[in-house]
Image (tube, rainbow, N blue to C red; front, side, top):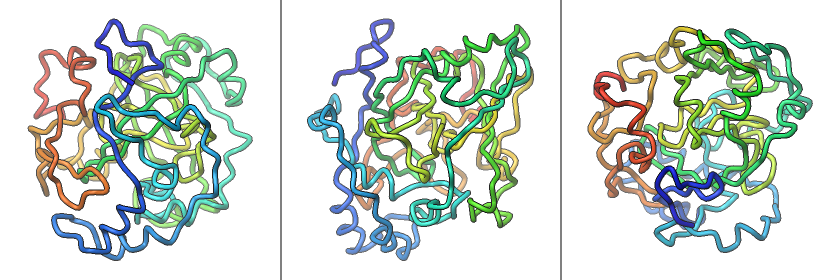
Length: 320
């Protein structure tokens, strides 16, 4: 698969520049030590505990490669190494603790500055929308990354369907609150529900998708079933999961991590190697299964040519 520069990018052929390889090698490497990582060694060891259900990967993924000829990460890796605090803060917690979560049936409430607000059944909301495979790199602020073959649709398709008004400058997303099914919500880890936001032009960009699956199959609970946001040029915490409401608003919403720690996290969350996190540098990243931050971080996670025009004239150190 090859990245073509806009305006010649077919939405079905967008591929990131990095790749994550076999999880088993990562586990073996993790056992050797955690030099260079700000990660609890017990968390690395715990990766061996949860196991994804046996899945038959659709044939179209068998030989899929990145544009630099590297293999995709495995389904097992995608589904057992996750950030989803609603199920716990350790990377293995979502796979271990999400079995009681019920993602069907599912309704999404759409409101605010739009002409067609309402409570939509997810299946009805997606009717008539084209679903596609998208191979995107997920980069977390802790400076680890993996490449995931998402399955979903452009967010712009949904936006156009509900007809935002001229006062809609931002979108605000919320994750469902079900502490009886999401054990992490029984603790004050964050202010629930999880809230995220996008500027309207970011939301309308063809790279921005709502994902409903990975490897062509439905999203597992630990990955944000049944509906999550994927914005590939931003840090992974921007990918709000298990979305239950979308509101069109006039003013920039206060997202969860701004509310939690505004010194370290901003609204935009664009991957910017020139802006350090207060506790570590973002200039280099750890490509799993590597134990070291030995790969240069690229601006906008490698999508600078496609998205930098969205931020023309902005101070990207201030607007982090």
